[in-house]
Length: 74
Image 1 (cartoon, rainbow, N blue to C red):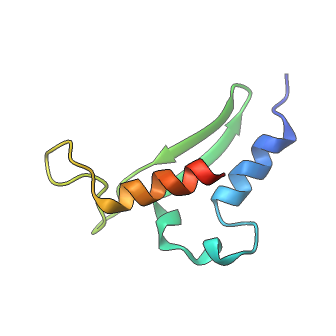
Image 2: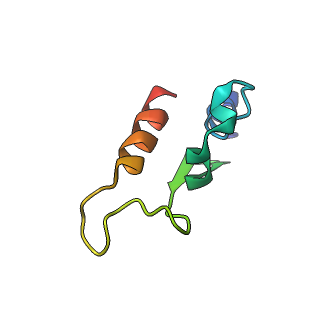
Image 3: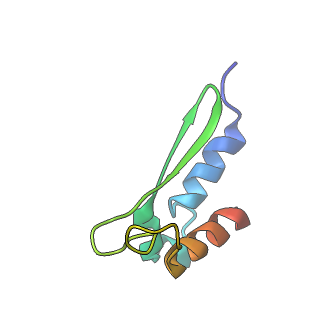
């Protein structure tokens, strides 16, 4: 069936559409969301000059931890 409206609300909040201070957060440049028939898809990715992992290792940078906490709050 059609996606639930709450999924759109979550996606909007993650993308900073709620009008609060989060909308100015540079972390949001690392996130893309979309709602499909299967649910909410949240993509988290590197941007130039701000990698999520340390070099060629599996070690996370602090920015990834902050992103995951932000997503978890929503």
